[in-house]
Each structure stands twice: as structure tokens, then as C-alpha cells.
Length: 122
Image 1 (cartoon, rainbow, N blue to C red):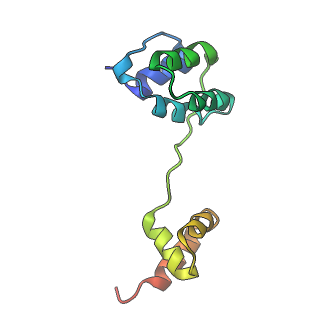
Image 2 (tube, rainbow, N blue to C red):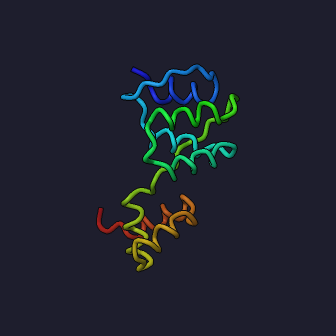
């Protein structure tokens, strides 16, 4: 059984050792992982356009298209905490869309201050 981070991604980006296994290959997760690298984002974009391709064709596209080199580790983006979004909505009177925009601007100190002001009788 091939692991995405230990086997599949290194085979596509670094080792160039062909290890395709149909049941272990998850195109969505591979595209997401590849899209975090500046030199490979256009490859991921092309694969997002052609999601109906067979898994082996998608693997081959990355295997033969990407240059073999070590890429720096990048953290995956995570969605903000639901509690913080609700606090921002209550504090500023924003809808969810506007709160998602604002949460990226606020610092952790500002979020702590908002939490303290909206905490009632705890």
C-alpha cells in the first residue's frame, strides 16, 4: 500500500521511481499537494481541468512533466475556526462571507480581545 506523502509525492517530485498503484492514488489530494509549489502550480491547474482522465494518465503527467528536485515543505492552508467566525459575526454584525474576509486581517491579539469582550458570565 503506497502512502501519499511517503511514497507517491516523492516518486513524482524527487526520486522519479515509478510506483503507480491505482487503488492508492487519490487525484484530488495529489493535485492539492502539488499546487503548493510555485514551480508546479500550473501542472496542478492542468490536472484540475482534466479530472476525467484515468488515474494512470494523471500520474504519468506529473511523473514525466515535473522536474526532479527537492521542494521546500509548505504547510497546508486550513480554514479558520468556526467559533472565531461566529465571534466576528456577532462583534461586528457581519455576515459569514464578510467575517471570512476580516478574520485574515485580524491579529491573534485582536481575536483574544474580541473573545474577552463577548464572553459573558463565564
